[in-house]
Amino acid sequence: MLVRSLALGMVVTVGMLGACSSEDERGDQVDEGIPGNGETTTLEEPETCGGIAGLPCPAGLVCVDDPRDDCDPRMGGADCSGICVDDPDSSTPPSGVTAGWSVCGKAICGRGTVCCNASCSLCLPPDMMCTQHVCEETAVMCGSSVCGRGEYCCNESCSICAPLDGACTQQVCDPE
Image (tube, rainbow, N blue to C red; front, side):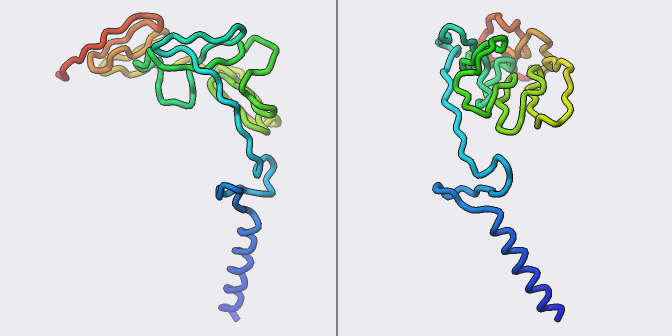
């Protein structure tokens, strides 16, 4: 009797799990029955800006660091490309962002969330409490130095920090 109950319990559990997910036309797993899931939502590709070529954004847009790459302008990536987004002070919705999605600092809030605090890139469900403290940039290690506010790690092997708008030498220093 115990074996039959365990077997029946496993069948019911497997059946319940099977009802919670399915595969979409690409073969990816999609959770169904959860609000917001089971939908395919794509963001339009934002226009590239900045970088070594200094590509400008169209009028009304500003260039910000592209959060999708691992190039960090504060950590020696002075030639990082960025993406063009609408000015955060503008009342028009950001370009390249489809309905239900919004830009929040360096994050993109998905469906069912709102931008709680842009300085912290914090997206939360609308019914959650939001903090409005200002997130400040943190210090960044640069070799044996620490780069502070308004600086980036220009040359890690030489432990050189430079102002965000400053030049940087591309030399290699031997470890001591």
